[in-house]
Image (cartoon, rainbow, N blue to C red; front, side, top):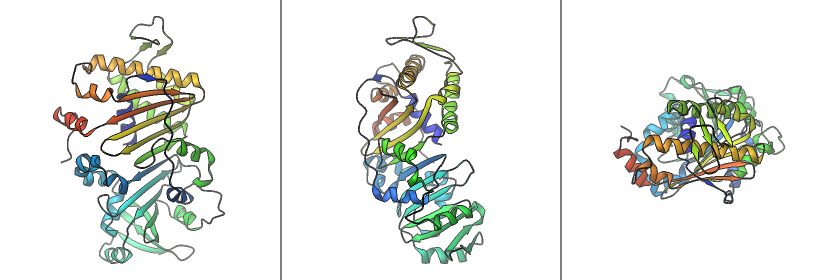
Length: 353
């Protein structure tokens, strides 16, 4: 799902800008405190603020009809908590954090309004649940079908994992613990530099994970017939003459080696602002990457008919920036309700059934 989001955002990019990168929003301290419950070196970390998004016009007009489908797409995990505690994406569930590690130990943090009495009554009627006691005596709930362990830290916070050992680690966290995400300066810097903080963001500094994201994009490019593109500062051609960057099928298989971090973030209001950030090892690599993306989009526009006046794709492309700033290749996009409605009219997007 995350790779599909990345592909969608990048495929919209259409121009290079040398403007200054916008200042990142500040991370709330309440969110930062939750990082003490997350492992120090995750493969990626994802944050979703349902409470703030529910208040927006974009949510009410575009997202609200997708709630049931969205809950099921989180692997059924959110549906588990909806049935057992009464807290759902549409009401009661405020914040969601997911951190995944290469050893497959996930950490899930939920903030919202949870009813322990409802939970205890519910599990009495569902044989897929059981309870166990942790090493310090905390009651841990087990959803056997999902291989999910979780406990209520208080009435507004649930900590969950697919491994009991990860649950035990969170229960042993104190203010002096130094093995949590909060104590990882590299990841904290990436999060701090991520543009938007109040809706959805995803960050990683794991090169293998970044490579996987780029290879998904690469496969989409090959399907579009873009086996090789030659790029200059002022024009984009399909023949290698006067070029500054030569891209072929292997480009996205190798470029990840020069990327230090990746961030995807959104801000939802009456429209959806999207930002994708690639932090490179140096300025030249960042500029090269921006040119490659721009060249590919120029070719995509020519082959897809997006250059036609009033084409919905063209309207979205008009709201795109690619900013190269120091060692960052930075993409910004704005998606409006009208954009979504026009896509649906062209059967590019379908309302959930």
